[in-house]
Length: 220
Ligand code: MG
Ligand code: ZN
Image 1 (tube, rainbow, N blue to C red):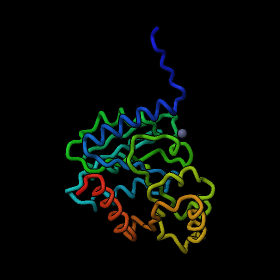
Image 2 (image 1 turned 45 degrees about the horizontal axis):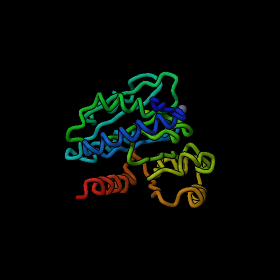
Image 3 (image 1 turned 60 degrees about the vertical axis):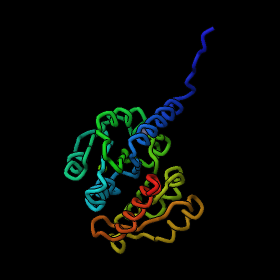
Image 4 (image 1 turned 90 degrees about the horizontal axis):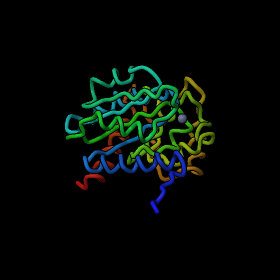
């Protein structure tokens, strides 16, 4: 009798394709970073500043997810070697099939980093493996110092946590200690980097982290 395959859940199907995406990027020698946060935390701005600072020897590709518009892709088009905008329509997160389709549009030759800018959302993007190697989670100062405790599923699997817009400290009430205290219960593995892509503060630490991860992948 013919074997009947059952896909137990949508998430299982997602994970299978995520593993395929990861194999594809491993084969191309690309380090993929999934960037997640609420809308307006500065994901696109971070990439606008990061990609030129990584230098010409680190060619970067970007997949950017939004419900509508190609605005972020237009913003990043000048600095990314390869870029594709994924419009999710009503979808509030990127999924592995969408990333698979996005990868098919990119030439990964000589690409060092693939940045995947997820849809701005603090809940379901964290539940969807896209095939990334690393997860970077942003929390911006104006969002408030209570978000780590409120959205633990986002912060728990993060490989690095970027506290962005620190130039607004003093303008809005924000207690660093609260974030550090909540993270001490949720995620002690990921480094927390305080930065402002706008002023450049902390960008050296973020770039050093990226380069270190890349060296870890290529073994050089
Ligand atoms: Mg954006
Ligand atoms: Zn969603």
